[in-house]
Amino acid sequence: MSTAPFELLAARASIDPFFLGFRLAEFAARESLNDAALAARLGCDVATLAHVRMCRAPRTESTAVFGEDVTCVATKFGLNVKALAEATKLIPAAIARDATNPEPAGAVLAARDRSDVP
Image 1 (cartoon, rainbow, N blue to C red):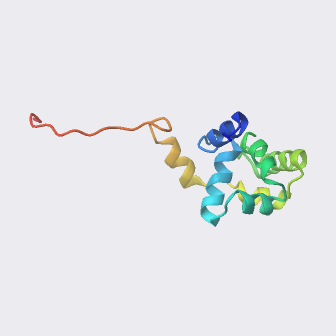
Image 2: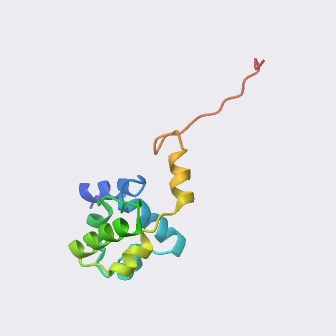
Image 3: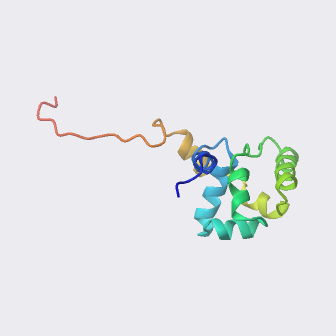
């Protein structure tokens, strides 16, 4: 059967730094976790991950604000607060890399040979 529309949206959220899915995807890649292992680490089932990924990423203005956001999401979905905080810590290199990428996700540039280059 095909993937449900909500799961497709959650997958799309994994490539946008605005969403929690982006930070979870970066964490899962660093830790070599598949969805089942990530869900186990967070203390939820795999089906819940799609909902968690669609949440806004925690704000980073201060530790208190970050903690409030993490606690809110963890409480809503019954997640382990410490595990979620660890998984969603700001990864400056990943955010900077994505923010400096001028191409939208999925864009492909083609190269061609030119004989008339000045």
